[in-house]
Amino acid sequence: MTNSSTLRRRWRSWLQQIDKHMFEKAYIDKAMFERYGAIHDGNVAIQTPGNFHNWVFSNYAHSLVLQIRKIADTNQKAVSLRRLVGQIAQHPDVLTKRSFLSKYGRRFTHLGEANWLRYCNGRNCRSIPRGVAHQDLKEIDRLATSIIDYANKEIAHHERGRRYRTLWLDKAFATLDGLLAVCYKYGDLCGQPVPCPYSIVDHSGWDEIFKQPWIIHGSAAPNTLLHADGASRCR
Image (cartoon, rainbow, N blue to C red):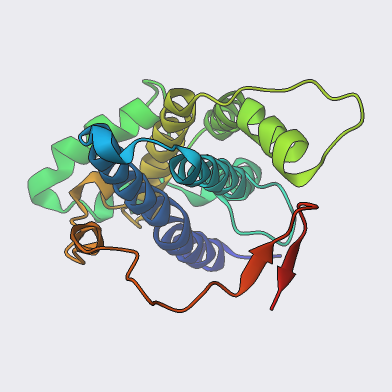
């Protein structure tokens, strides 16, 4: 039987991975996409033909959907937010009020007390009620189910007689924000705070490439050719 300290260490390790490899990446990609969109919208001269832009938009949308699918993954071999909350639902007694308040220190005990009551739905419990984690599992499913369905039926599979589904980026962004709110909560409860991704500043200057000419006369030809029959063949 796994003891409480082992479970807490595992959950903290998972939260680090979920933060670094899922949420941080998703929000960096979102910031880059929004910057690219601003460049596109601000310059009419580059908007047509739209083939390249449509390719970028489509690939970003698919990447975002798969990132959300990863966060809500139920595979038993996966590290995911949903599996984390699922394990906490099985072992809610591990997250005690005493251990939760200890990381706040005496100076901020009042903040810890307020957060504990909020997380416990107003009940002053010794440990997190089992129903709290079950509610959050339902919230994760409510947020992510339609996005996962889109990933499975529009990206991972091509079903016979399928109907075309529309993905609205605003809905996907709202889903990502909702999942992040759940992650914040359990980061606080487990003693592994999740930093705000909106505070991440990209200093790479990646958009500087758009200030340079992309096609240089006499540059190397592409490695593939599109033939009349539509087939792409390597040289």
